[in-house]
Length: 158
Image (tube, rainbow, N blue to C red; front, top):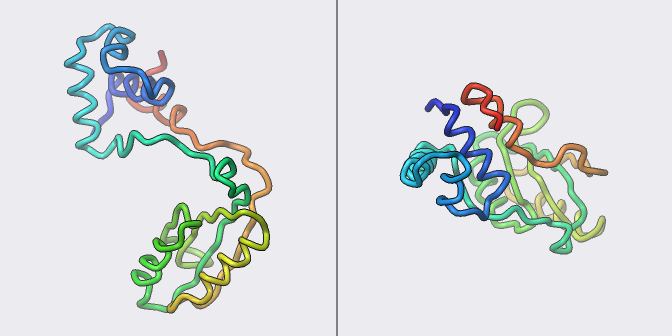
């Protein structure tokens, strides 16, 4: 699905001003409200827009420790381990990977002792062979999409 310049401008506004109305986006862009709504509907349908939920801070929710846990899985058990990971609330993302492990998880914890408890829970899951943990010290580039959006749709900077 191609994202054109108008789509990119709409996506940019969604990222910069997520609580603004469709009517206001249309006014800012100088297009009809129906045009903006139709574009949003298509972007949702095509999987470009996947959610409208707020980004929450795990630290503000009492989980300031962030770690990346690589998990090596017994061959043939990837799906069941992935399903078990979904039951651990401190795992906020998990990906299948190539390289030194089969899965890479993003884990949050209250403190180092809590992180150890979470890791021990992961190690005890059937199908998990071993884990390797890397603790994040500081976020250097926060999650962002706007720079990427600005590169698509004919470099649609406003």
